Length: 259
Length: 69
Image (cartoon, rainbow over all chains, first blue to last red; front, side):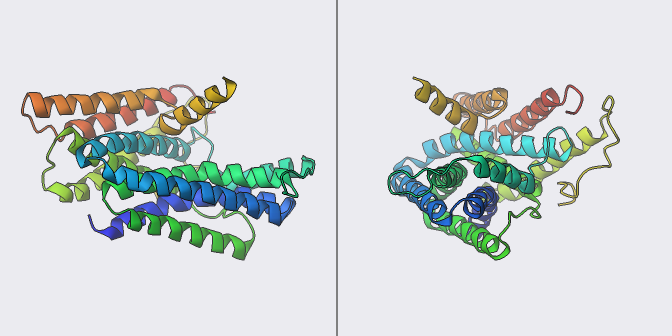
């Protein structure tokens, strides 16, 4: 695989997580205090960078077969989680993730919390809210960067994809000074779920010892097949009769089938 | 102890998620694939994708068994 698909996959996956982190940072900064919020953000980024710096080189030292088996299994499980949630959201069985309402919830909580100074930080609530939000969302980014970068023996390309996503989302967030509610988040998660599941299946099976027909070119078939099966499940669930529910036509514009 | 439990719960949720059966199917499929390749000499590249699709369908079926929330 060349570096471009790797960079693009990591970019999209990381952009989704960065959007969620941005919502929390904006809620903390706009309602509390920017200085403490930025301190929390910076502290979380330092921790995440340290994890990548330690685990990144270590993981590339592992034998490729063992690495592909373990990482493939993890990625397949991780990707199936994303796909499952995205399909349930697209078919109305789970509420769509709404950045605007998530932002309002965080703002309400931030406004009601008391201001306390601790360890040289003016507003400890803003610091911890920003730190925890960025760290938790960032852990998924780190997981994707390390697994994709390690497996492709190209950690630099994975880091470029992740860094580009964070920069694009941050710059956009600063420009609009609001959560990126118009981004089709579920469609992006659906796409990322397809990529993670496909790569996880490909690498996991390789790690178990199989030789894919056509070698790396098998991915060009596997990705569309995973997408088609996922869309098939989505359509099946939409058509399924649901007791006491309105017809499936009344879905939000953020639908995976149209993405 | 409480902290350890919450760390364990976080990692379980992070890796396994809402349905542990999906993870179990993936692990079992990989083990069976390795067995077929190394013990029986069968290049079972098709097994894991089939199990992945089946696991996703099974998990969705279980999640949507009742009416929509």
